[in-house]
Image 1 (cartoon, one colour):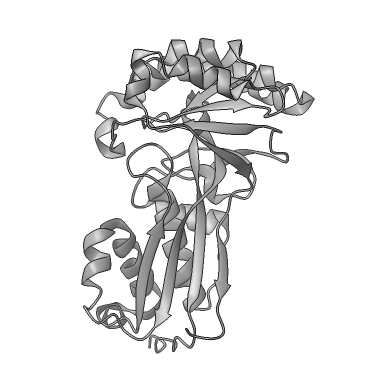
Image 2: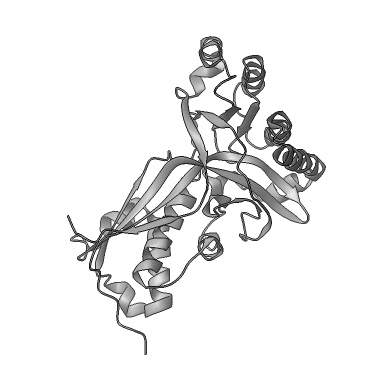
Length: 311
C-alpha cells in the first residue's frame, strides 16, 4: 500500500541557478560532454499549502515539462491516485531568459524536483536530481555544486573540479531563441564526434588553466569550443566579440552551445568595460544582442528552504 500524501504545513522554496552557457561542450571518450558553470541568476519553485484553486492548470500550461516531472515523482512515491489530486500549489518564478542557452529548463526542473522530494521527505543530491532531469531532456551540469564534466544526455559525471575560476562574466544575451530539441538534429552526435580532437585539446587547456590559475589558458579552451560550435549554430559577430574582448583586457569568451548567448570572461580590475562597450555598440552585430549585464560565478546546486510561518 502506498503511503498517504504528507500534509503541507508551510511553504517549501527551492531554487537553482542558471548558467551563461558552457566553458566547453562536445564529443569526448565516446559521448557528448559539457562543463557548465552557475551564475547568480535563478529559477525558484514554491510549493505552498492548500491545493491550487485552478487545479494546477496555470502551472501545467506555463511549465509543461516541470509539471510532467512533478507528476512523475508523485506517482513513483505515492501512486497514480495521489498524483490526480495534489494537496498544494506550485509557483515557478525565473530570472532566466528562455531558449537562450542559460539553463532555464534545467533550473526549472531541478528546483521542481527538489521541492517535491522535500515535501515527500525524500533525500536528494546532484546525482538524483540530474537523473530525474535527464529522463525528460538534455541537462546542464549546474545542478552539481562543483564544476563537472558531464554527459548532458545521461547525467553521468566523469570528472569534478574543486575550484571555481577567479573571474566574472559580462553576459550578452542573444535575440534569437534556440529550442534544445530542435537544435539536436539527427546528425548532431555525428557532427560532434567529428570534432573530438578539438574538444580533447580544449579540455586539456581548460584543466591546465584551472590548475594553474591561468585564466588566459582557460579562456583559450573556451574559444576552441566556441569556434567549433559555429558549425552548429553560428553566433553573429563572434569573431569581432572575441577580438574586442582581448583588446580591452578580458581573458576571452565562452558561449551557450545550444543557445544565442555569449559571456565575456574577465577580471573586473583589468577589463576596460566602458571602452569595450563603446566599440561594441558601433558593430552591426551588436543589434543582435540585448544590452550586456554582469554576473558572478557561483557554486551550482539546488538550495531548499522551508518558511515556517505562512504569509
